[in-house]
Length: 254
Image (cartoon, rainbow, N blue to C red; front, side, top):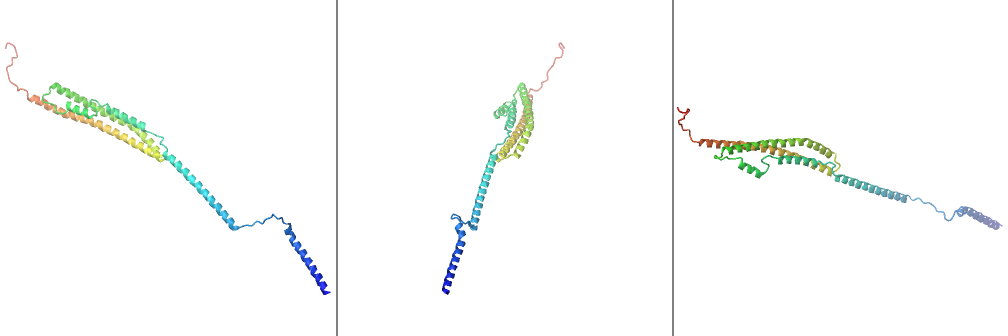
C-alpha cells in the first residue's frame, strides 16, 4: 500500500518536474536561431581610438608640412622678384653729359699726346733768339688756352651742379624702394643702384677736379712761360750795341 502511494507520488513529482522544465525552456525555444549577442571589448575600443588619433595627427603633420612648403615657395618667389625701379637710365644720362663736357675741352684736350705736343710748342723754355712776333704769338696762344681752360672748368662745374637735383631724386626713390623691398633680390638690386649712383657722383667730382686742375695748370704754365719770355727779352736787350754819341744837325744850313 505504501509502495503504491510512493510510486504514485514519484510519478507525480516527475510529471511536475517535466512540466517545470518545459516551461523554463519555452522562452529559449522562442528566440530565433540567427540572433547574436553584442559583446563590448574596452581594450579593443581603446586601441581603435588611439589608432584613429595617430592617423589624425599624421594628417595634421602632412598638412603643416604642405603649408611650410607653400610658404617657402612664396618666400622664394619674393626673393627672386626684381626691383620695379631702375635709375640706370638717369645715371647713364648724367655720366654722358659730363663726358660730353670733358670732350669739349678747348685747344688742349684731356689727352696725353696733345698735352705733350702743346708744352713742346707753346710752353716751357723760350729761345733767346726768338723774334718779337714769335713771342707775341706764343703769349696770345697761351692766353687763349688759359681762358678756354677756365671756361671749360666752369662748364663742368655747372654740369655737376645740375646733376645734384637728379641724383637727389634718384637717391630718394632708391632708399624708399630698398626699405620696402619684399625679397633679397630687390634689396640687392636697390643696393647696387645706390652704389652706381655714388659712383656717378664720384665721377662728377673727379671731372670737376680734373677740369679745375687743367685750368690752374694752364695758368701756371702760362706764368712760367711768361717769365721765360721776359728773360729772352732781357737777353736780346742786353746784347744791343751801346749808345754812341754823334753830331746831330737840327736845322739845315746852320
